[in-house]
Amino acid sequence: IPLEKEQPQIELTKREIEILRLVKQGYLSKEISNQLSISVHTVNTHRYRFLEKLGANNSLEAVVFASKFGLLD
Image 1: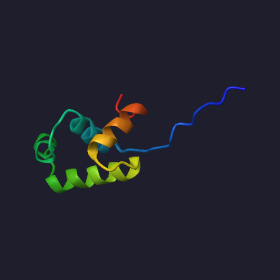
Image 2: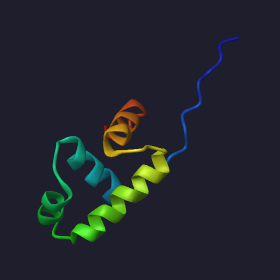
Image 3: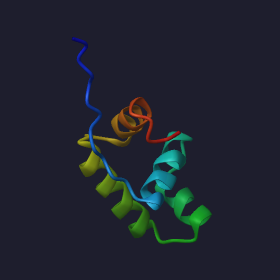
């Protein structure tokens, strides 16, 4: 009987995914805030939330994890 791996149920908002994609492209929080016309504080809040939701210690881990589970497709 083949066992299927369960994918984690992770719900990122559209904005969190958008910021995570920009992080993956190498943008800094200040650059992201300028690009999206939001404050740096707001960018950092979104970053904190996706790190927490993904259980990542840093943005690189978050990008790797999100990519692995198809969240950035």
